Length: 112
Image 1: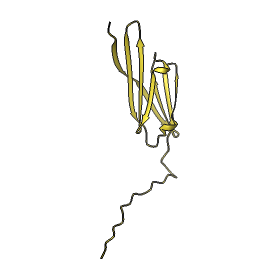
Image 2 (image 1 turned 180 degrees about the horizontal axis):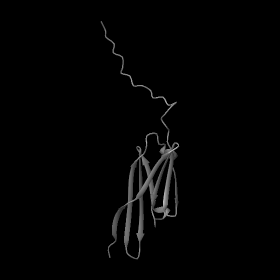
Image 3 (image 1 turned 135 degrees about the horizontal axis):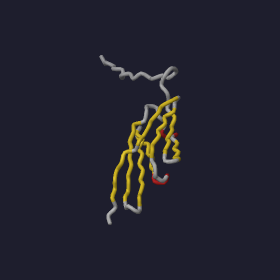
């Protein structure tokens, strides 16, 4: 008998509070070793897989989300408990005390 594959969306909630980005993803029935998190180019990719051997079905889950400006993906942490994946990472806040350097055009020099 052939294996049936179904792709499903992941229910996700995102929060940005007090300089921390938090993503909560519901993944009931998925084992922690079947979850893959990738952060590249300011985008978080979440993939998960759940197999039901008796029914010979495989469920694939996927979610892509752009991270907020200033998110420090290299400092991200993840915890999986009771079917809920929690990903957190610090975000550099832009506000008072943050300086943005102006972009200037190169000087043009005319030679007589």
